[in-house]
Length: 338
Ligand code: NAD
Ligand code: LMR
Image (cartoon, rainbow, N blue to C red; front, side, top):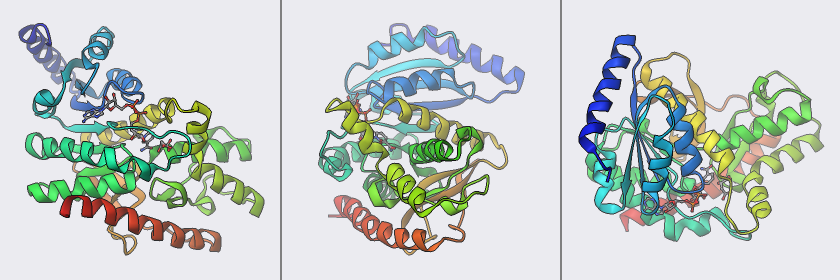
């Protein structure tokens, strides 16, 4: 498995040549956890992305079925499947972008931090593979708790001597997607016309929407501010409860992950002005990691933007966010250093 590698390789070359003639670059993308609730729709959407020439689908279960299914889609990307730890290195070798939605999701009553014990080890193993096989790849880390898994990944890369802070990006795009949706509802606008920076991290009070910076410029009553902030901070829990024990957000997350991955690929291609929010190594606050707007370029997060002017409500929220974030970051770092 895959059944006829030789034929597949020649097909990759043929398509790569075809793209070269048209001047279109194609990137090699791996999805780790590709058979999961997020992984499957994410794999499908990445197969449709015209910037992807090769798509590697890795999981510890069910990746052959998902790969066979997705490989029949008549889009440009060539799909290969990889099953289990012995195939991790083949899945990663030569990749430009690695997206990681591997790990267990929440059930009602759990916090994202309750996933730490299982997901920390999964992320460590996968990042050790990245450090060995594709140390220059951009990494989009989705597995929760993001506030701790990104520091874990950074420590693994530091240990291996491959850490490049520009290339490690925690995916907080779903918070932005939710913020745009909920703010647009209140304003009576199309969500596509709305911009809402969401900074801090990806859990509860660490998710800090900057409603004073919404575009188009607008103002909210104190009740609207309270409602929107709570709804955005608890969007994940809203889905976990509605799914009643069967998992957390998968479809909106796959959509958000593809939006973010596409922005990374456009940056890699050299497009100007690609700016999205992400949880990255940062000097925006005193914390070593923080989510804010970043400019994505050929080498990853090339510029990290300051938060801009905050109102009193946001300043109070920022202090609460930093307190919880500091503990989650420290927990991630000590998992590797201990
Ligand atoms: P899921 O259980 O449906 O899928 C997870 C997949 O990971 C499974 O297919 C499983 O086999 C695979 N997996 C487990 N261990 C692995 C390993 N060592 N290597 C490779 N694959 C492995 O879960 P899901 O709903 O897809 O969620 C995945 C993760 O994403 C969870 O941790 C969840 O909390 C997180 N998540 C993050 C965000 C975000 O905004 N960052 C949003 C939603 C979910
Ligand atoms: C989300 O925000 O939907 C994810 O982090 C999943 C979760 O556990 O809430």
